[in-house]
Image 1 (cartoon, helix red, strand yellow):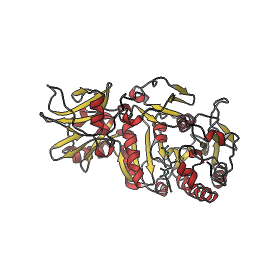
Image 2 (cartoon, protein in one colour):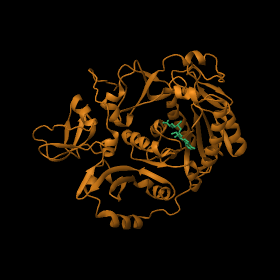
Image 3 (cartoon, helix red, strand yellow):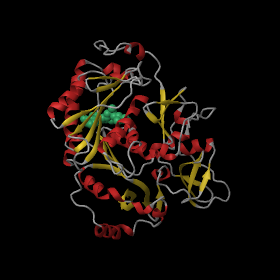
Image 4 (tube, protein in one colour):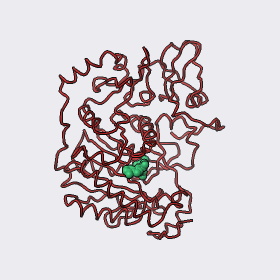
Length: 460
Ligand SMILES: C[S@@+](CC[C@H](N)C(=O)[O-])C[C@H]1O[C@@H](n2cnc3c(N)ncnc32)[C@H](O)[C@@H]1O
C-alpha cells in the first residue's frame, strides 16, 4: 500500500514494491573474506553479493566478527562512486574523506573499501543516539584510519577546504524504503518532501565549505522525487558556480537509470532498494590542495607528547599492532588509542573543532593497574595475530561469548588476556583467572535474545 498522494515516477515501480526485497551482503576483503557461500556477484561492487535466502544473521558469529556487513545492493554503489572520485583526484594514497550523515555506517564502510592506502575516513552523525551504532559498526569493520564524530553538519564550516571527498547521504522522504519500512509509507506526504529538501539544502551548504578546491562531493538519498534529487543538483550548481557535475561511470545493462544528472536505483530495474546519487566536483577535479592543519605536529612536538603520555601507555600496546611504528599511541583519559601517524596533526586539528566519539583504533582501557585490551583491537585489521594466546571456540561457545556469558577455557590456557577465535578469525577477549574466564565482550554489543537456531547460519 503506497501513500495516497505518491505518484510513481518510474513505470513498474509500484509492482516491484510489492515483491520481496533481495538479500545482499558486503564481505570484508581487508579481513581476507572472498566470496560468501552460494552467492551471486553485485556487478557494481567487487565485494558485494546477493544471497539466495535470508539467514538469521544475528546468530552468525561472522557478522559480529566484522567478516561481512548486511547491505542493500543499491547502497554498494558508494564504493564505485568513491573509487571514481579517487581516480579523478589523481590520488594513489592519503585521501581524507568525510561521510557527513553516516549512521549506521554502511556507506562509510563502502567508502573505506574504496579508499587507497594511507587514507582516513571521518564519519559524522547528527542524532547522538545513533553515533554509538556507527562507532560499533566501524570498529567491527576493523580499519584503524577512522574518526567518529557527532553533531550538526554546520560544525564542519570550522574546517574549510579540509576534505578531498565529502559524502552526504542525507535524511530524506524515504520513498526508496517503502517496501522495507512501513513507517516510511505512513510518514510520507508532499509536505515532508519539501521539509526534507529545505534541510538537505542546509546540509549541502554546510558541507560545501569543508570540501577542498578540486574535491568531490557525493550526494545520495533513498528517495526518487525530483525535489530532493534533480532539483537539488540544479540548486547546488546555481548556488556554487565552481561546481561541476560529474557523471557516474555506470555501464548500460546494470539497470540504474539517469535523469538530469541523477542516477536512480529503482526496485524492479535493480535487485535493491531505491537510491539516487549524483557527484559534483568543486572546480576542476584534483585541481587544488587540501588545507593543511594550522599547526603541524613536529617531531619535537611528538617527542614532547610521548614523554608526557609515555608513563600510562603500557609498552605492551605497541606489540599488539602489526606495525606499531606507524601509529601515535596515546592515553586519552584512560582509553589508549592508536592514530595513524600520518594523520595525527589533522586529527588533532579536527578534534579541537568537532565533537569526537572516537578516533583511530581503541587499543585498551586502563583500570587501576590493568590495561584491558578492547574489542575494537580484537576486530581490527591492525591486530598482530600471536600478540595474545589464542583459544578456538565452537559455535555454542561463540554464541555464549556474544551473549556475554561465561566461556570455559581448556586446561592449560595461560592466565591473563586470551583472544578467542571462531572459524579462524578473532571473536574477542576474555581474562582467564584460572578457575574461570571473565568475558570482556562490550555489554552494549551483546546479543540479547536467548533463542539459538538448531542449524548455525553460515554466510562466509
Ligand atoms: C540516510 S541516513 C544515513 C545512512 C548511512 N549513510 C548508511 O548508509 O548507513 C541519514 C542520516 O542523517 C541523519 N540526520 C538526521 N537529521 C540530520 C541533519 N539535520 N543533519 C545531518 N544529518 C542528519 C540521520 O540520523 C541518519 O543517520
